[in-house]
Length: 312
Ligand code: PMP
Image (cartoon, rainbow, N blue to C red):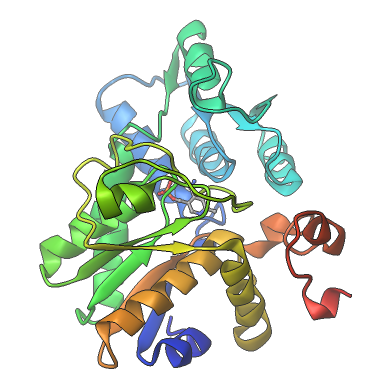
């Protein structure tokens, strides 16, 4: 859909792909379905088997839904600093939830390594491995990219989004370039992530901090390898939150912070491409998933983020 406030700010046309409208409420439903279908096609997953994954939550929700529909069990490993709503949702869907402390990737107890170990130790289980399983980006290459292209009537000049696994930016980037090689693909990186500097000067260097869930990567995952990134922006949580507030008040869209950061990136890309440009980004998930955080005045004050004036 066309986003009016962002279009006005950029001086060109900005569009948001409504991934919050997927059955699990986020863009990650696509990776979940793609990874499970791929494991089935390779004969790795049998009826009654288990899908194990380490996730900030959204991939887990997608996996739990797909697994329920196809006769598998779900085990989700998640850092305990993610929103309570995502944990409650996973439990409600019947997933077994394993909470771990948020640690650096190098720590053997990191949620990704913990999920791999559980998969290895569980009979009939697969490890979804969304970061390095390229069935993730393939799902975006085959579905998200052509949908965006068609929904924009084949007239698109730029696309941008932030990376968690990198599946969306790489898959959509590759897919759009395949449909029109002139589309500019931009990475929008939150603070605290290392990809902006990597695409800028080849060095993985993080700067600052972000409370955005689901985005912010410190390494080149297999999904990011060969991603056709033409340019990059670094966006603060403050900028992202301003867009979250504006989209809610002006356009009736209740979104998570990664969507706000994506919109800030799309505005930056639109300004760079000029007044004729048509730029698309991803509205990744619903804000209803963050009522206890992004929409909670105490939490916002604790994180030094501006409190929406209607929250008091
Ligand atoms: N936004 C949110 C809310 C997410 O949960 C994720 C996935 N972790 C992303 C954006 C990034 O998507 P990807 O993993 O495809 O880079």
